[in-house]
Length: 314
Image (cartoon, rainbow, N blue to C red):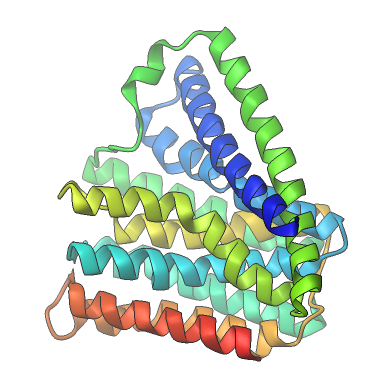
């Protein structure tokens, strides 16, 4: 039954996230917010809502390993699983903004998170506030750079400009309800599943829960790659990792401190996350610069498979 709760929870999170993104973008248009700001902030916040609800629900339910493991595992899956499979299907071009802003911010936040957790074995209110403040600064810089470069944003659907307030309210209600019950069922199912399989909550969270919350991005990028359309960009995945740390863990810690219950999160999992993040630089520059081809994708994907095997065998 626990597997059923996990699957139902993930399905509701996908549905809830989709409705919340639509409602948020439509409401932003009504409030006369520019398309650039909508794409950089509103869409990013809304797409991080499933991870946020799962981590918050887990922290409030006394399962901090799921709150932390969800984010650490998602960041690993975004690179190892999503980026790996996408690059295998269709090589990805990497823009210069990757190593000038996105990658350094992701690495800095990842290292800061490690030291925050290591210092007191807890992510407290002030550390959460610091992470969330860093996200605000990052977004301001990102929006300024994008305005200067006159970037177009494909992910903002112009058709949402003419949506009525009634529809927006209905979408918000559906999205909010689906996210609430989805996170509740997923956390409950994950705890029960870990107990029945005789593994820790941390193992379930950094693998199954993390893969589940990464499925929408994986599906979108694989479909785009197969159709030879513009696949999900490396910048989007890096941005998702930044949001996971600064927004999901930052906001969760502001509401409920996140304790480190499982030592492996700091002795193993977070180093996998740092390793997957760090390896992107040599892969982007060597041997063929600014192209993530099939061989590089295969390397990342095989590394992710090794991570899964070693995690379950601990």
